[in-house]
Image 1 (tube, helix red, strand yellow):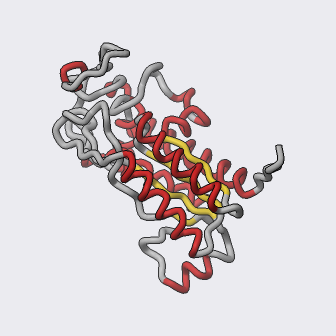
Image 2 (cartoon, rainbow, N blue to C red; image 1 turned 90 degrees about the vertical axis):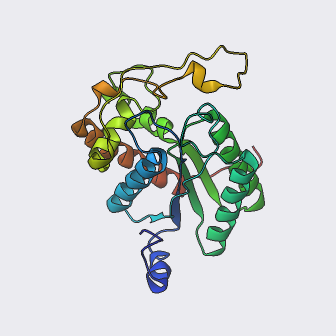
Length: 243
C-alpha cells in the first residue's frame, strides 16, 4: 500500500491488514557520469514497492535528501545536515505511530556511514520514547549482504558500480546515460580532506561494466524478499526489557 496513492478509507482498511511500514530514505547525489542523481532514493522506493506486492505493507513516500559527505564536492550532490536528517526521521516515526503504525523499517538507498549513524540515532531515540514500537534500520548494502551478495562479481562494489547500475538498468533503463569505467576512491585515511573529488574524480565505487538489466531484476527480487523476511521478523520480535 503506497501511502502517496491510497485514500483515507484505504489507509484505515490497511491497518486491519498490517501495522508495518517501510520508510524509504535516499539522497540527491552524484552517481558517476551515467546514473541519475536520484539513484539511491529511486531504487530503494522501487524495491520497497516490490516487497509490498509480496505481502501487505505500507510504503511511505520516499525521502530524497540525505547526508552526503564523501561526494559533497561532486556536481549535483545536495546534502543536508545530520541533525536535520535525524529530526525529519524522528518526526515521521512519531507521525506514523500516531496514525496506528507500530513496526517501522527505515531502509536507506544511501549507504553513507555518517548518514546511517543519524538514522540509527533517530531509531534509538524513538525506541525509548514509544514502548509499543519496533524498529529496524538498514541500508541497501545491508540488504544486499543479507540475501544477494552471491550475485555480485565485483568484491568491493559500493556506489554507482555493478549493483546500482544493474538496478537502474532494470527499473529506469532510459535514465542510464552511457557507461562508466571501474573506479575506487583513494582517500588518504585517516586524514580528512576538503576537496574530496580530487581523491574520487569519477564518483564510481565498483565496476559498472559488469552491470546488466537481467542482474538488476535478480537483485531487486532478492532484496524485496529480504525485506519481506525482515517485516515478518520484526512483527514477531519480542524483547526482554529486563535483560
